[in-house]
Image (cartoon, rainbow, N blue to C red; front, side, top):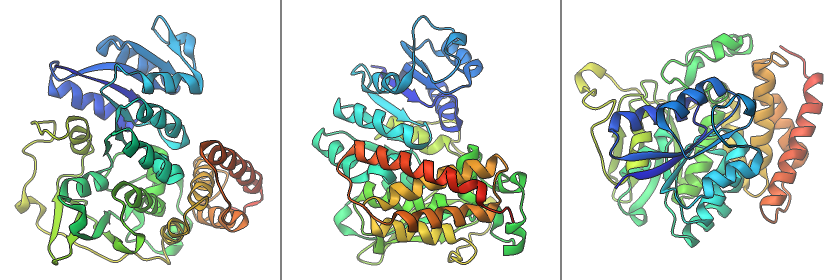
Length: 380
């Protein structure tokens, strides 16, 4: 029987690769039930024509979408995600917009393939609690969390998670070069093809800090038992150390097709786009380094914020998003991203939150104060 899947963020990097995976698997495994996209209605129309979904959402330019009834607004995303015709929902939209539709799906007993780390950064305790209460599987799509998921057999036997990071475009650059880098240099990731925002986060290593917070919630592991290791080749996607000293790692070529496929076909495995592409002799060497917190202060900040918990990750995530968008718009420089986020985190501290509404209220307040701060930041 075909599995019905909705893809929230179908025109983005993860969404488009997921559709490639589904197409490669053949017509007998999946039915595209819903597609949700942002402003790229040209690509959305092509996806509609090819996959013939039952429901479609667009956040912009609705009149240009070639579909009988196009859903819009926050309720529209939740309607697609929570529809019980779905067997699984791939949450591939970026930013805070993934949180409410994820919860809507979980509360209706629908499994989640999660590529939206902000969902767990903002509300990890709530989301994982709801998943447990509704007997819903949260299947990680990020290559690092997918690797850990594949390596864990018995969580009680795990002593440490080892999360790898490529080091991004600035691993071998000086602090001076980083401070004077332009947008093109920041977006020139040596290993992965991703969206612009996540590519900037990979350059600052903020993305790795967010992944640590996500791993803490996904696998219920204390922050003291999660280690970040720089691995430039991006072949070892992450590893798990067991209490007897054994370490099990997951290796593969740096392609998101593999973890996407595993998340949506779990627990089964099938031949896919990147099958039979791995060769130890072609790789030749694997390097591992400790992260340099002086060069990458965003990583250090994220680890501190994760340990603080409560409202702190919400504040950091919102401030970082706005700072990254400002950098991409040419409003601030590369080094200013950390300066802005660190100041906002200090200004807000940690406050009490009582549910999703409080989280979004704080998120909005942080974004407003971050935007007000940005014009006064001097580009270095």
